[in-house]
Every structure is written in C-alpha cells, then in structure tokens.
Image (cartoon, rainbow, N blue to C red; front, side, top):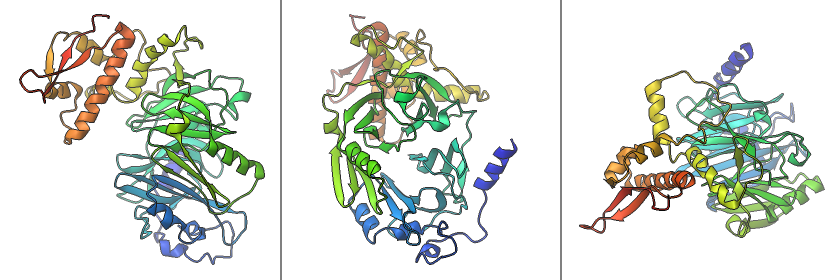
Length: 447
C-alpha cells in the first residue's frame, strides 16, 4: 500500500519550473553522460530526419538516437498519429510530450523519468495512454495516461493484475488491451501461454483462455507494431500477425523480421535507425537501407487460427467448421454485440469492481442482446428502431452510426450462426422507397 501511494505521489508530482524544449537543445551537459534534459534526445537525431518522416505521412515511427556525449548510449524517439491527433515523445521520459511536432512545443508538466520504458503507447478517447512498461528497477502492468488538462502522467486504476501480465506481449485495440503471458521464449516455456484482456473502460482483468496451440514461436517483451488492420510482432525470421477485426492469428515469413534478425545478430547499435508504419505497410530502415513490407500481401494464403482457445477447450478442434463457434466471444470482446448492454448494465448496477479470472460469458448462455432478439422474431425494424435497440441513436455522426450498426449486426449474426446455424438479422429494402433499409428479425430456415 505504501509503495502504491508513493508511486501515485511521484506520478502526480509537478516540477517547480516546468521543463521546456529549449532546455534540451545543444547537448552540452558534461556532468553525467546518462543525464539528458527534457526532449534533448530529439536533438541527437540526424537533422531533418524527424521532419522528413512526418512529411511522409506515417501513422507511426520510432527512431533510435545516439547520445552526442557518449557513443553507444541510445534513446528512442516515438511519433504517433490518429486522425487529427499526433504526438512526439521520448521512451522512458515523460518530461517531454509534444502534440505539435512541427513546432516542438512541450506539453508536459511531469517530472517522471525511467518509468515507461517498453510501454505500449496507444490512443484512447483522444488521450495518449501507456500500458505496461519498465521502470528503472522492475517491470509493471500499470495503465497510465498523459493528462492534457494538467500535463501530468496519471494512473488509471485496475484490479490486481493476474500473474505474469507484467511479462507479457501487449497490444491495444479501440476498446481493450490484450496480454499474451509467458516467460522468455514460447518454444522454451513449459507452461501454456495464457491470454487476458483489460477493457479500457473497466478495472477488471478478464481471462480469455490459452493461446492457440498452433503458435509455437514467440518472445515476450517484443515491440508491438500497430498497423491499420493488424498487430505485428517480429521474432527470428517470422512475423506473428494478429488480425484486428476477429482476433485471428498467424505466423508468416517476413522481410522486416529477417532484417531485424540481421541487426540483432550483428550486435550493431545503429544511430538514426528507424521503423515506420503507414496503413498496413511496414518500413524498416537500418544502416541506410529501407526494407518495405505490405502485410496485406504477406498474409495472402496464411492459415489463420483463433488467438485463444477459450474455457480450456481441447487444443485440437474436431473440425474446421467448429472454429466459428468461438466467434461470438471474439465479437463480444471487440465491442460489437454486448457493448451497449454491458455499459447500460454497469450504469444501472453501480456495483463495486471485481477482478475476473475467467471469461465473462458462459458458452452455454447467449448474450443478452441475442436473447432479446430471439424474443422479437418476426418483427420488421426501421433503421432508427434498430439504432435505439443497439444504443447507437445518440451518436451524432450518421457515418459513425452506420459503421457501428454494420459491425454490431455482423457480430450478432456470427453468434447466432455459431449457436443456431443461421443469421437472425436480415436486411430488407423498403417496398415504398428502395433507398430505405429495414431489418427483419428472424432465424434462417436452416437454423
């Protein structure tokens, strides 16, 4: 308890004289080669490199920069962009966070250094967030974010973390973070790798199941690369690719992974080495050579498997046709089926948070949404009525409502097909106006 209180005090401390970008220019501090001023590692980067990468329109890039005062001492400069949001920051140093990379204006009031090494950065509700990481002395599973209101690094509380989560592979989606837990190299691990999730809106850790047994080679604490439609981890000469829309996983030979393996084996610390992402294309630059890999092309013909085997099901499925039975759970996790009902239930119950150690839905129990639709079979609903049912009617943007509606229908029909053999929501154009879409609630005759 005392350690937690001390950590909270450190994270919310503010400097008497807020650090500024100007303090970091020049690199003239000779007192300690391992000390750097806020934002100073950006000045170690080759002149013009950051600006040129921003101008290329990358969604993400990471640059390894070498200290001008000690050869071989490197720091990582990271850039991320999402819609109109962009940020530039230094790994392991929260004293400099810039939301205006062109002018390099420092928006941080934090004094936290050495806390978010190897953290996974991601956007959530317009905030720069970090999951897991390493402080100067230990690895942690904390969830924290940078507050735009006060400039501080703040913690977002969670329940007690499951064992091993601090040592896991981490990736974050729009609604949750995911954790594949094992020690060291998967092929050398004697225990199965477990998969957990932590919804961004919740304090509860949820156990999903075991990593699919077809995945044999992984290394924990590998950097996560977040592409438009995939999460990618490189190890040896292969890339592990997780598909965002259904949490399916595969492993494929990768040009980027081969290049990274060559760098690791050479033990060379290359200043101004960088990796970048644009859409589903990965750019890997080392020693002046850039390798470009489009993962839409890399996964053509790949054998996709579900990320996890839930509820300790047998590792070998009876047939490939049985695999879609997992999809209703994946759908729920991706925020489609039960998101509105889950949120509504949370608001209604106001019950204390608890830590979950098992998957939230019994495979024998349909989701509340599907049960309710089953009770309304035979009805024909307008688009507005369906949006009210899904709790989407309050969304202002018609394009966003359409996207949410389509995804929710897809997820519900996936569960319906898995349980009863057919779709339950069917699109029908109006007889009066063909531009108008209605939705019939009825199970297919094959169900």
